[in-house]
Image 1: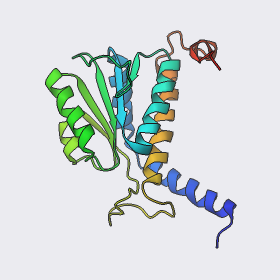
Image 2: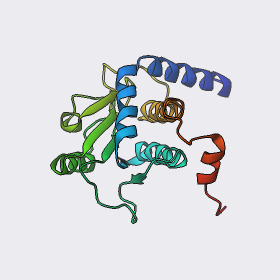
Image 3: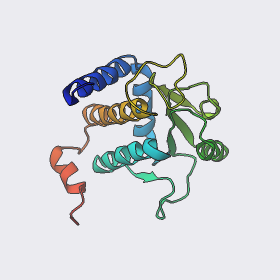
Image 4: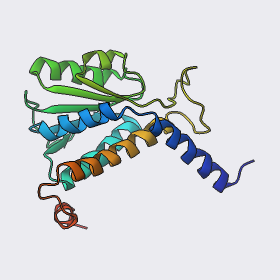
Length: 188
């Protein structure tokens, strides 16, 4: 039996290993897609969707026009927009539908996934490959002590948080800490 400290150390080491193996080129290209998009639309299901919502909130704080697919106030997608999908498997049927619809509209589509050759990946202009364990536990995936797709979801969350920092540093415009605070909700 492990102590909580042992478990935390193991998990952080796992995530560090996963994030060390990211392609910086893919992540920078995603940053450029976000920076040049008229608007950013984010979709995912389950915990991946929650990571997407957290990322969307940080983009909003940073002054980007961002929407979460499925929310009642989300407008229609247009050709100058970016649809960012988050799917460990790359095979989530609803997200595949969104990707195909976005391509019909001629919007850009990006995917954060463990499986760039997936059905969704085939529809995308860009995939960011996270080499993490999913709930499928494929032989090619790294080992983890965590259940289901936790390793992917945590890695996606940290990657997207790092991407916000990269955007703030690379495209500072009027994005100071105080301007981010002004975008933060005041109905608390």
